[in-house]
Image 1: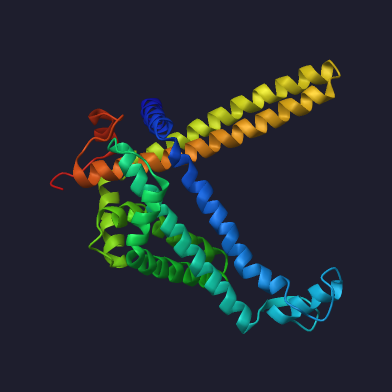
Image 2 (image 1 turned 90 degrees about the vertical axis):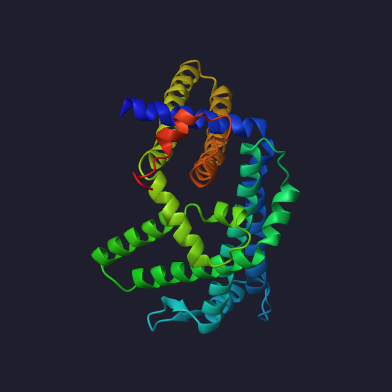
Length: 305
């Protein structure tokens, strides 16, 4: 087990190296976050600030908004959304799903470029995703509907049923792991079911050690987090003993920002690792700076496969 985690840590370092040589990769999740805020504002602002005959600071305004979009029980507790509320919620969910898939495809297109030694470009990534709009739309509709169905079932079954549905949702997420790079590399295919099938078949090849790579990344994050906690506690104890409160505040802020930066970096690196697995599994090419031994461990075909 120790050797497996060591290999996973080595894969993480290679992934971070790719990010270090292609720093524009760090911008894609931030860009997605900004556009997500725009979408949220697009749907929420007309709802929250529509005219009700009351001032925005008046509690009666917000009460009127609540009664417009929510169904209320006799005891005064909300029982769910109105039909119009459900329409808006579903539309927002599907649009956000499309946006997530769009930026994921753009992201992976540039991850694959980076792994091949080609320049990384945000504009090129967005342009490629735009050229795959049909495949992205169909996949977004499929995964959006599946997500809505899973959520609806969870609301109507007991604890055991929710546990089973949760496992089904997890299996769906795992099976669709390679869909984004498939959309990037197979422009002629827009069938979402075919993309899911191809992703599942590739997953069978990488099952085991490939997922251990993710476990290794998470394990590495945990070790760094625990080590940072020790350093933080030590810094707080020292500054408290010296009665230097402002230094304690600075230590905490530096710790928090450093931890967030590290978690963000490893999140991007994990996507690079997944992209490397896809390239090797689909094309048999060892993407730099990984080596064949690392990929052979992380990518195992079944005999005869």
